Amino acid sequence: MYDLATDKTSIQLIREFHDAHRIIVALCHGVAALVNVELADGTPLLHGKRVTGFSDEEEDQAYANNIAPPNMPFHLQQALDKASGGKYEKADEAWASHVISNPKLLLGQNPASAHDLAVEVLKVITQKK
Image (cartoon, rainbow, N blue to C red; front, top):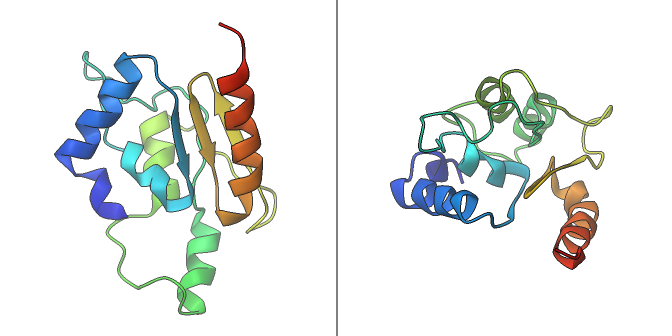
């Protein structure tokens, strides 16, 4: 999943979605695909936006329980916080649902956020234009 953070095709597709005013949705580690996406003026896609994704605490627990492989190339929470300009948010407790709905950018923190994220996606796609 972390390879998407540096995959040129993935980055280009996400930027094209943004430029076309399409909805971008990411959950858990999938949010890593957004970390290095830049707009035409060089501004990070996530700059100034509230963001969430798998937290450092959840990552540590996943390592400790042999759920996640060791030696991930970067800490997602830290990368998201940097790309957003300090706007990373997480649930009060690890593994609890946490969803952020920016216009056209919908993010979920972890697998427990999947249902709530789907509800937000449905709200956005069913809004009248």
